[in-house]
Each structure stands twice: as C-alpha cells, then as structure tokens.
Length: 407
Ligand SMILES: [Zn+2]
Image (tube, rainbow, N blue to C red; front, side):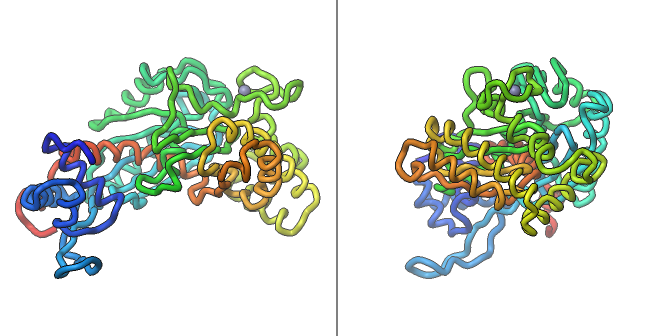
C-alpha cells in the first residue's frame, strides 16, 4: 500500500496508479489506494486542473453500474531527453503518457570535434526541440541528459568518457550555462538511461533487467526489483569494461581485452568489412550502415554472417557471466544490438546456454529492444517526467484551466 500521508503523495499515488493500471473509476481508485471516495474525487479534480488526468470514459468491466473513468493525460506536460554519444547527439520530447512530441538526432564525430563544439550542437538541438514543445502549448518540466562515460553525479562531472576521449569535463555546469534553462537538468550515464527506458513500471516481466546498450562502446544498465542499480559511487553498470579477452585489443579505457573491444561497434565494423567499404564510412548515417549490414546478413553474405556470429558469441560469453551474477528476467539488446538483434541472438543464446549454471539459463530471456539508439534519450525524458509522478504539483496550471476556459 503506498504511503499517502500528505496530499502531494496522494496526488502522486493516483497518477502512478493510472499509469500502471490504466483508466479506472474513482470508486476503484479509492478501493485500491485505501482512500475515501470523496478524497479521490477531490484529488482527481486537482489533477484534472493541472491537465494531468482526464475523465469521461465509461468503465465497462466489473460488477455494478458502469462509472465514468479517470485516465492519465498530461499531453501538455513534456520531459526533454538528450544524449551525447560518440557518433551522434540527440534530443527528444515526451509527454506524460510517454508519447514522442518531437525527436531529432545529428550524426557527428564527438571525439574529433571536442567538448565545446559538441555541447554547442547538443544545446542547439535541445533548443529547437524545446521551441517545438512550447509552440504546441506544452510546458517543459526538465531535461535528462545521457552521456557515454563515467559520471560523478554528485558534481555532475564526466570523470571519463573512454570513447569520447574526454576526461574531467564539468558537463553539468557547461550545459546549464549554455541552456540558461528554467527547469532542472539531470545528467546520467547513457546505459543507465537506456535501462530506465526499457524497464516499464507495472510490467512484472520488466522488473529485473540487464540492458546492453551497444554503441562504439558497450554501455549497460542493471535494473533489480524495478530499481536501477547504481552502486556505492554511481559507477555500476560499466560492464563494457569486464575483461573477457586477456591479451586481446586495447580498449579506450586503456585496459586490454574489455568486453566492448569484442562487441562494440568498432569490433563489428572491423570484422564485417574492409576499411574502404561504405559500411565503415563514418560520414554516412549509422542507421543506413546498419541497415546495409542487416541486408547483407539476410542475403547470407558469408563474411557478414561470420562477423555477426562472432560478435553474438562474445555477447553471450559476457552476458553469461552477468547472468550467473544477476539472474535477470530479460537481457535487452539495445542501441546498435537492436538493429542487428535477429542475427546476433543465435550465437549469443548458444554461449548463454553453455555459460549459465542455472537450469534453462535461469529463465532469462534475450529480448531485442524496440527503441534501439532512442533508448537512452527517451530514458532521459522519462527520468525528469518521473518527478511529476512523485510530485504532480511541479506542473503549473495550463492557462486555459486558470481562466476556466475549455481546453
Ligand atoms: Zn575498457
């Protein structure tokens, strides 16, 4: 039973119940949240004025006479997400129901351009996304930014971005200074944000997850009992730097044989084609290059198939170690792995079956993400929207509601 000791907490509890369980009557909400019907009616009025819920549907299921239902709304409340990756910067706006209001991505070479240029481009992308949100009459409640590297979240400093080639960058201060934003700006590792996007509140099959976010590096996020595992200093999830191939290739972090040296995008591209092949041309869109690799694999091109089997096998070797440690309900293939998941999965599952000690791989399923490279940026938006589900009064009343007009 949720703690509903204060009004804010009660408002949040109603909102979360509607998100997790779908539209329902006030009577049912009262029953489920152990509140009186009049209390629920008052809370619903307040949430409706904030534009966070709407009423009017008819509840058909259940016994007794049908009642009007309350459902999650929040189409005028947006969270922004952004991502700084080695190959791209991106921005998205999601409304409270998780629908995409605006989305854009720009390909670039972050390590070549350097910090200032990349941040300028990211901020321009965020500003255009924000303009679109405001033009649609919606408000922005915050920005969540994912970055490919280790983040000191206490100071909002990027300690190390092995593949960006960045070290000790005060990202939080730099971004806030450039944005001059009136809303909160949160920073997190992109693997953590991808995991946040993949873990769905209320879905029992999405409470224990290992998310593998394939990029130039290999980011990861671990969700246990519905919560992101951060560890003592927030550096949990750096699974790309598990050493699986001692004596192998040098990693961007300086070590030898890290998991991402055999599973990251560089490893795949190196194995799949010669240097002059267009799929290795960084000036072309990564989506198009991955689509071409997918096409070749479907046609049965021997080199492509062998390269994908090799990467899939390495994915399985590392995933087996993590599965023995964590017994996740699902391993989600995200980022570039999602684009090529159908080709990577057979070899991966073979290595998982060989390496996991629990019978039937401990019930762990390998799942291909439907979000792909969008996972991290959507997770950034979801994180700032989560604040509204905790405290709905963070939202300001829409002008139409203040003036009493129709919306
Ligand atoms: Zn490494």
